[in-house]
Length: 446
Image (cartoon, rainbow, N blue to C red; front, side, top):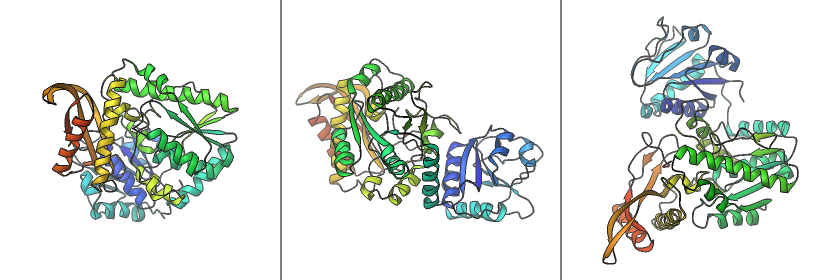
């Protein structure tokens, strides 16, 4: 699978990630690395070509050594031309005289037919790639890899979301009865979430599932904590500690499996620029009581995970269900987490999801949810002064969560949601709709 590798050097996270997805869509495997990656590391990876994702300002500081590796180089940038100190990378959209190209593309343009054709020309004409990186080849290679590397029982941190569900299917095919799924209720789930997960995986899918209610344990650890990064790290570490405790009860468990995907790594600064720590990356403690961590999806984007899920036999409804972050509504409860804020958020979120379903929009919107901004404002309710929380409604369109546009919901729908939330949920005084795309915002709030 990795015999034909293209490296994307990241000087612009948005362009780097779009370029990586387009390269994979062209059936060539690629990975994103920081722009500061050493020449020796690049040589060790043995790529067939290099794509440099530049920014809008000055040309990225590239070493002349990069152009002496004997590898084709493509520079994709929004503004300043990409060039080495000796000008080896020329500005040209078509140039058969050299293996070095620089092309000016915005993120949107890179995703057009013109952008795809330019990348494919570089991959197949310049780098002489043969292609062949597909869903089937990935599954076959990953199952073989898991069988070769896992020599004991595996505990899977199952959230019930797409990523952990696909991970469960891969592991089940690879190691069979060696897999034990543990579902931890950390007190930060949506309304009715725990009951749904247990019903789906234990009763309908027949998997070995251990349900652990650790809500008080997590909420006590999070009491008084305001900093978003610290909250994520607390949640990430506590997850590990709970799994360690459960592993001891279950007998000898050598490995911990997680549904980590590529955007988790990239946004956490592993292989690219830091955006935010994901609980299963930045929140991982160094001292874990397992022989190793198993993350079979860690180099796949979200859209690739969904395709793999369906290829493995998961239902379309499960594969395309609403994404839900590992830290749960903890990253949708801004500031200090309290039981009162969580209660108001759960009820408001349930109403919003119910109205989206009634409007028959659930399959056309990639993700939609409510967030408690932790800010109170004055209002009127039942003819009296009300001082309640501000709830933000969020709905976005995306393919892989790296870039997202805002869903233009009908005003009557938003009004209906606001009226229901304020009237039916105690402690809420105001409802707003978030119209921030990603970037510059993120999909979640913390």
